[in-house]
Image (cartoon, rainbow, N blue to C red):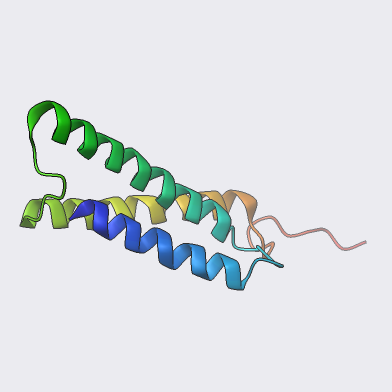
Amino acid sequence: MWLIILLFSATISTALWYVKAEDDRYMLKFLSLIFWGASLMIFIDNLIGYFTEGAELLEITLESTILGFVLVVTALIIWEIALLIKDPKQVIHKKKKI
């Protein structure tokens, strides 16, 4: 289930980035790349587990659902930290007026 949640998040963030592509002020491209990278990593992990151990390709349990939401929150936290560092609205690091 965590793979499905991350793929859904990646799709939504990519659509949002595409709408705002001319002015990527809020680094939606970065958020999209975080979600797609995590989705690809989890897909490969599940695929290898499926072929080597015979594990389920898509695990649908309460624990995997909770893990999916925790991963989304973690990705959003990393994105927000990157936004604070970049500070696109100049809130933290105000430019000096001359």
